[in-house]
Length: 341
Ligand code: PHE
Image (cartoon, rainbow, N blue to C red; front, side, top):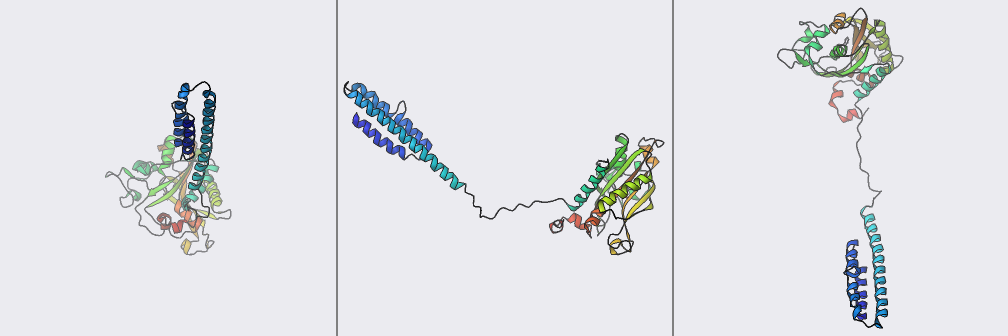
């Protein structure tokens, strides 16, 4: 029996110290020290020994158990160190390697200008609205006091989506005026940016799709002076305090009186140059007092309420703001262009 214990000690300690991972070590522990393990098997034979032999054998068995336990402990620690070492090696970070370069985009220059304009109007108590790009002719024309025979209604000018000319791609953001008046409680202070569509040939200043920003105020006692004051404030905030503006009479079916607003050419200071086509001024928007027929069509009492509205071209504002000479650059989205802003 003594020999068996000594053999067990030799074989098992060797095996334990060579276990390759925690799992192998655990199955060795069960094999040698478990309830049905080899040590137990040997101890079961103690009964065959004489009373004199037993204490010494018991002592030896305990010693062997202690040695095995210690060997397992030692190996466990060594394995855990080894695992850590392997992990560290596998996860090493070479800080001298060139980093991965992530391209982070930025806002399109036109949207930079749009956000600035929105901020200015929000600061003056306006809300931002939206309307559908596919619009009823009713909203795009009829409710805006634009007669059946009006040239803007021609199929050669407008993208119609139905044979009966009742559905179209909106040619202006003005239908949002009507949508707001029909659904919102008064007073209204709103701006509404969005895409509009016209059958224009593409050149340096035209595109069949472009962007407008509509604005409208409906309240008691609103006058043309409010319109001029508000638009002057906005343009100065956008282009600088020293910006010079002028208002010219004009005609729109849905405003009366109507006007256009010009800003003095930033290039020549009003003398006339290629940028302003010799005019000295650049037109930036159409505006006017909302026509009583439009107000009444939306159920608004013109004895109590009046209002003004404007519509401006967003590309044109962005082009002036960033000194962009060709409208097409705004839509082509050539990164070499976009990176400059
Ligand atoms: N919708 C007009 C246009 O596209 C601009 C405008 C808007 C004029 C609001 C007056 C009032 O030209």
